[in-house]
Image (cartoon, rainbow, N blue to C red; front, top):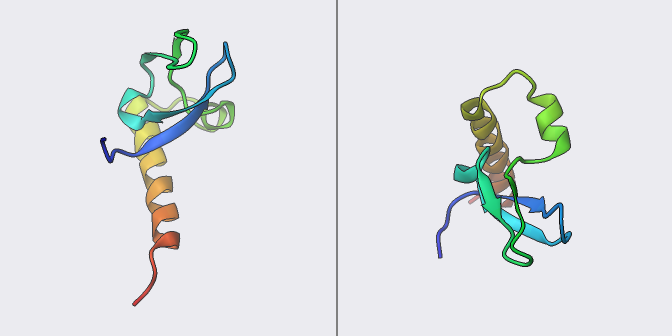
Length: 77
């Protein structure tokens, strides 16, 4: 199993929550539950806050947010 950074996305057809690798942001994906195809975008809020950004900038923002969350989980020695 890959250890890539992922984001949660709800399938617009069946409502199943999927964990999608950030490498697929902006690309067409298929739900593993129902097989429906849809565009992999982070969330409506992410899209609104990222208006005018290219996909690279959106991916960078998502990776930075994931890094901040990981730092909070990592115990300080």
